[in-house]
Length: 472
Image (cartoon, rainbow, N blue to C red; front, side, top):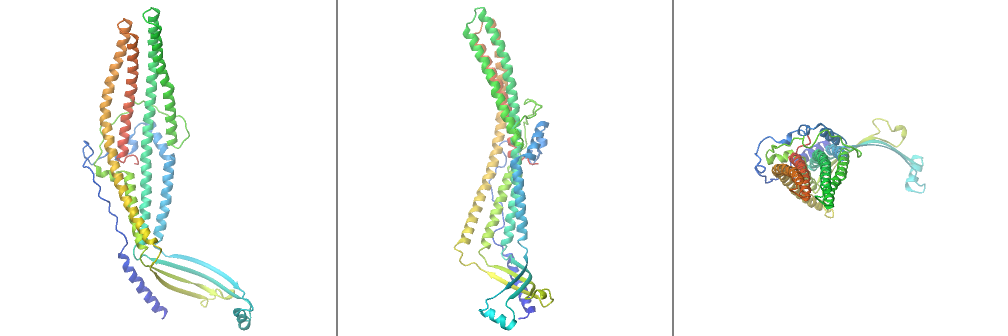
């Protein structure tokens, strides 16, 4: 067969096998159906959603904006996620290159000295008048697996899905960081407010202690009354180091989130000065899939698992590969680059069909299908959890608003009770226990009101994050 005829048949074989490319292994990805409500609770279904607001717009306190910015720059978890993106990008480039031929170049030079008592040695001695054989080769080899069944394209699809998944995973980490820094900051402001309340109550307790001591000096009360008043004062004093400790630990936690060493955190505002968003647009539940990075990452993981099923199926079908080698070859170094006598070339085609691989290929396919089924469940779970988190945050905002009103009314009542108890005690119409009890109730009411306000701020952050906000 001549070289022309061989090339003709080779071209026909390539075109014939290429026609099988339409028979791709595996199924194209389709998002699984997930049951979603028409709206979140009583929240109106609108096209707009607070999740589309950039975090700098949602959090308007300058100190908090600076803390979030530092955390997004220096946080260790986010830095690791960005490195995962780089690794995934490298795999995508490798998957794209898998469709291209692989080329290798080599240069070899060797000398063989056979035994003089061997047939080769005697032949060299008698016919070539030499005792060794030289061989010099400079060649280029090419090999190419033709993607008949689309296996390599499925590998590329899987790698691309993993790459995009790493992007969404980084976004999910960012939304978590933004929410954690904001909630930690609000908690720190709450501790500051509670510390102010505790110190103010210590001052009030001093006044009550002095008042009761004067009553004791007048013989109106006993030493027991003084001791009870001092104990109430010490209870308020005990709160101060406890709150200072909690504040210092909270500051350290914020600094660690920002990738910094423990230390002080600057804040130039108070908890009461921060606005609480009373109404936030949630949009429609179907958009949660498009907004939440963790849900999108789960969907991309499912897409990669679906593509891997195609790869496993393709491994069970015949594979066609072409190889070609060419270059220069000579048995004397002086004639190595003699053209065209030193030129050589070979072209070959190979079809391989796996027959018995100790069930490895079938196992790979079964495992890939099981992984895909797990990915479907994880995706549906991610969507369900997202809807639940939004619903929980809406309930919290609604009920915490009611609690805030009750707590404000309670605080006003207890403060009036403290004032009235002191006046009645001086007039002899109330005993010292009523004064102490009123003061304790007022202290607890103030601390509770501050705690509820912090919870409301946290609930707004939770709603913002659960809708997918924070990575813009």
